[in-house]
Image (tube, rainbow, N blue to C red):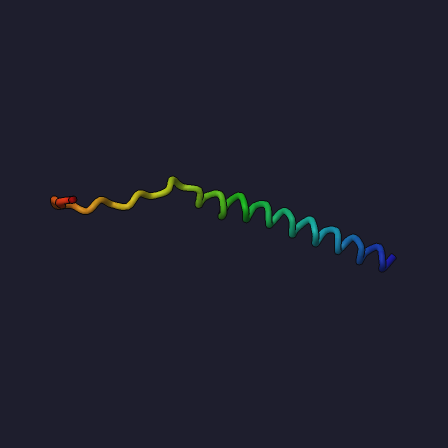
Length: 49
């Protein structure tokens, strides 16, 4: 019975770890997919050769 409880505990630990990793990926990493920013153009007139 004790080995069954240890097995059940390990299975639940794995499930909790996978679910938390899924929500972490979903909330934190996907929010960073913003459009790439362009560099600001510097003002003033420049002469090119």
